[in-house]
Length: 237
Image (cartoon, rainbow, N blue to C red; front, side):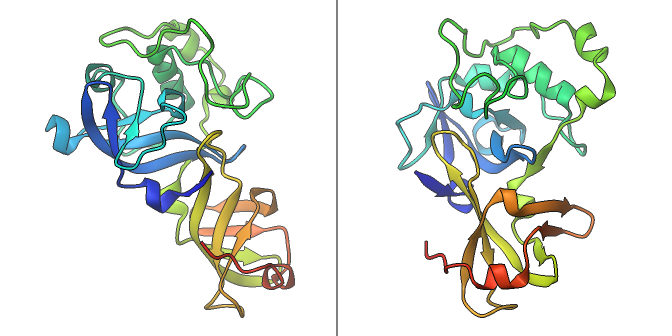
């Protein structure tokens, strides 16, 4: 089922032994357009104001929440996870440390949306997160990785909402939301509001139509024309 990012934001996160935070944002991979992490603010639950990243691999699939997103982790396992770097982008090195802590395979190592898998499931026998553990992957191997291999392609869903959308021949609207598949956590559509630029209301844009994102000018560029956007069927949520 498809879910709006704006409706996922704000949902509490429930560990096996109680709630531990609320979803503040989602980080997506701009190469494959999939949500890789929930950004969880634990301030009201842990009293530390700390933010943590939780992978969709840990979500209890088939139990989409009415009141919370449930994960296969304890509060201690989440609390003891590697701290999120402040005031800087999430690096591939940090992702490797986080994956080592939780025992997750790398989503970028393989041909499918989740590396060797189409869905964010863990292979049989993989030990889910462990409190107080040390990174399983040698830090030297992470430090010695080529710079390009350490680059991250993560972007904030919350940030991209509101970006201006530019077709090949002019402005057509702004990003109003993103739709997330709650099984694969892929992003099959962007919701674009074109009412201030073109006739009609909201339309759905495929990520394949995106030619690039300019983070400096807060704009998203499409490889299609204004006419193509204008002629798209209106989207009604």
